[in-house]
Image 1 (cartoon, rainbow, N blue to C red):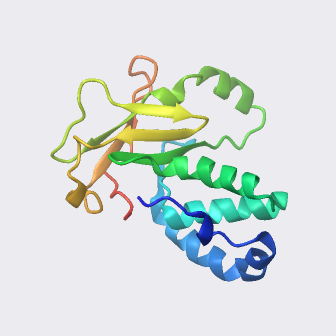
Image 2: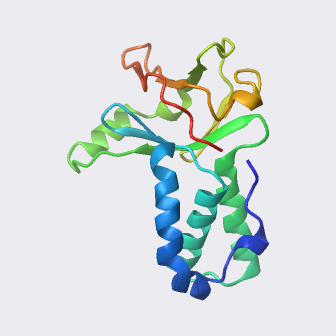
Image 3: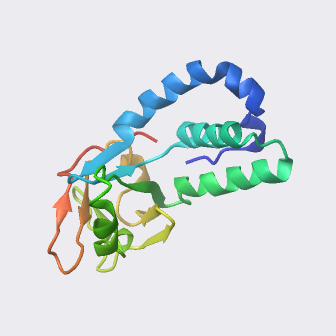
Length: 178
């Protein structure tokens, strides 16, 4: 996916004026890009438009105006897209019960290193290539799914954590369009 460029970013005041129209469009794009896995986990596959929205929201919230800080946000959020041959996403861990949250998070340390993708007709190699920075995941799909098939391919996201005790799958939900 094409990364966001500096010239695409509005200053936070102009963005604030246009926010409601931009927000509704991006939120519609995000919905099919969410893959829920079990009760607590969501994988959110970003695209250029949704990453641009995240950058704009951060600039608005923090009233960022310095070029160096704007470029830092662009560089940071562009990582969500992954590089060539990668599919990038954010792993959201959503535990509503504040009493359960500390223990679940402690039990799930290392969780972000266990997801892998299986696509219909294509299997990952014995060790899946993925990296994690914060809750950003990147799956190396260059040998898994031919690029021309990517928008149409059905995939499963499989979470095989702690010796297959908690194996979950999204049962082949369609990948979001890039």
